[in-house]
Image 1 (cartoon, helix red, strand yellow):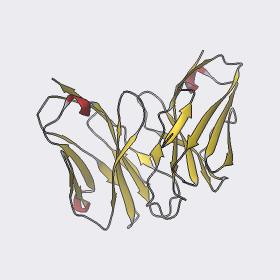
Image 2 (spheres, each protein chain N blue to C red):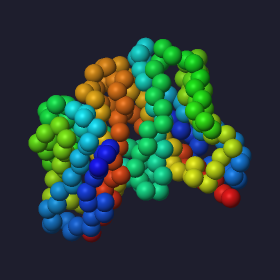
Image 3 (cartoon, rainbow over the protein chains, first blue to last red):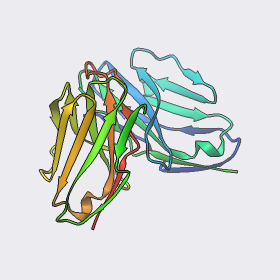
Image 4 (cartoon, chains in turn green, orange):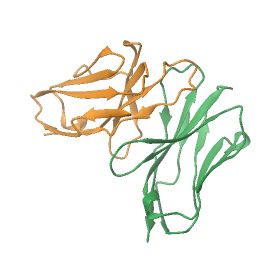
Length: 115
Length: 115
């Protein structure tokens, strides 16, 4: 069975703080793909990153960084120097190899960044 | 227009009404998806179309009827819905589903309220 757990339901920080959103996954596939999406209040899911299971390099994109650790089945997302515009619900998702379109989403973490 | 668009953005309907949700993608993709997002629940995949053929139907009640006339358009026909069907309905598209690597891009969603 495949599963994604985002244990943090809500996080509230003050602007300029760093914040890490946790994502833990379960899969029996040896090849799989992990994703992060952002859902602002407007509702649209915005794609942030895709990571393949065979590529454990961490990635940085501006203020965003991702830490992929196969040993702990985690794919955590850090926002550095958070801004009010980062306020949104963030979803981690998993798709196994040859699973067609089946993306398994976590429950989401609602991030609130206060000025 | 670019990306994935959905109409209407908001819909209120009675349980005896018939309505349709429309999704259009301008990304040259040939796989399209319907998801349901209810409050406090993870996103649920409803249907997958690949090259206009339905390849996945996740035990969705028959009061939801999808239609994919071509690779750019996807419809969700609704009839005799229940109040618990009230949710945000998200459409997504991706390159043809292969081994799971392809990224899905989402529209802004239709927020549906069934009275």
